[in-house]
Amino acid sequence: MDRLEALTKDLREFVAEREWSQFHDPKNLAMAVASEAGELLSEYRWVANTEADLLTKDLDRRAEISAEAADIGIALLLFCDRIGVDLLDAIRTKMKTNSKNYPADKSKGKAERPK
View 1 (tube, helix red, strand yellow):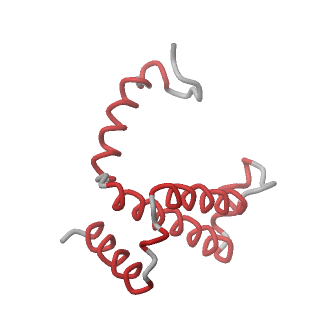
View 2 (cartoon, rainbow, N blue to C red; view 1 turned 90 degrees about the vertical axis):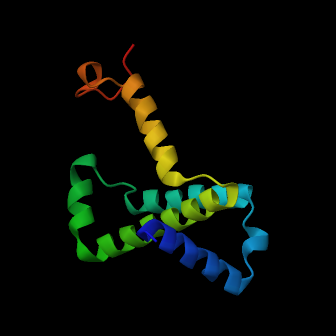
View 3 (tube, rainbow, N blue to C red; view 1 turned 135 degrees about the vertical axis):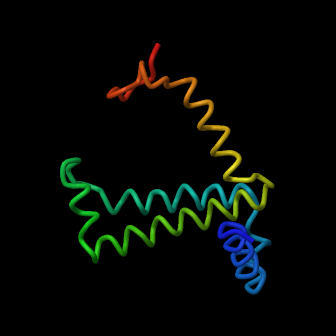
């Protein structure tokens, strides 16, 4: 069993022990992903772009940021598990699409989508 499968199994057990699956419908899990992402965003609120990397290196702030990233990951894994999406396959498929939409020769150093 690979690490992602083992983690998903552990999450299922954690949820089952608490009888939380009744609350974990796709809508609520999607909302959990979004709300946890908002909490991650709040860690960087009012931080200048030039200071964001430095902030992340602060050990106390890094622990908070790491915890928020973990909450997003947990919610996303539970969401994917609930709806039957293999997250790694979905990411690989999306990366192929992104490679077509953002060819390196037209996208290098640019934030916007090439025309």
